[in-house]
Length: 287
Image (cartoon, rainbow, N blue to C red):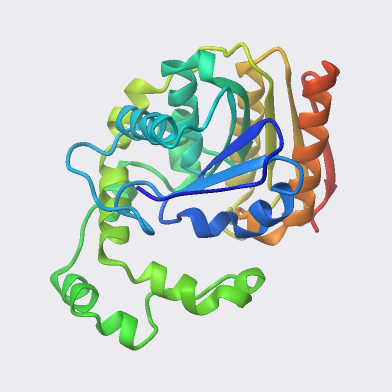
């Protein structure tokens, strides 16, 4: 498994990517925050530079493999866990399994088990039918992927404009055959995630950074539902607060890197001084 750590400060931040992403999504934040903290990004099994691993791809497996990776690399905890999107499930599971190894949780427009359940799933278009589609893989898509055709034609993925300096690397990374397979297996494991990841509170500070009106959220119901789910994350800890990035989208680490790194610095400084904000929701410009 691939682990990329830089910086020597404390605490250590360990970043968990969202679905279909890997360590490259943290490039901007790692470059910024490693000047003050130790910042570790990694690739889940089957993504980026990490080899695939057999077995289920549920939250428990992913959290235990990250713990094993950090232990093998002699990265000392407790660590600050930072997660984007689907990665929110995995860091919450990590905090359940290894509470003494977690100093704080930072959710970056992250999902919760409730995202895929009931009315919330319907409003967001993330019901079981949609998830089932994510686990399917037509034969023609498989052939294009494993033959290298997509890589040759540069058709695997576009790239975020903020990562233009590594556009060729990003596109090649998205063409790795196991990357799509991992994404499908993680989607298939969502029912298990819903059982494993609980809403039990944690005894560490929680920072929630979230978008306001992403183009992905195309209805008023979807926007209000996502807002509700983000607010619910505040219930995880008595030491929690939330900041919305104004005029932002789902990928805050790429579209609002300065906002994100600034808010993380403020939060970690406050945690160190035992003066973090509690239970509030504010906003700041995306930049």
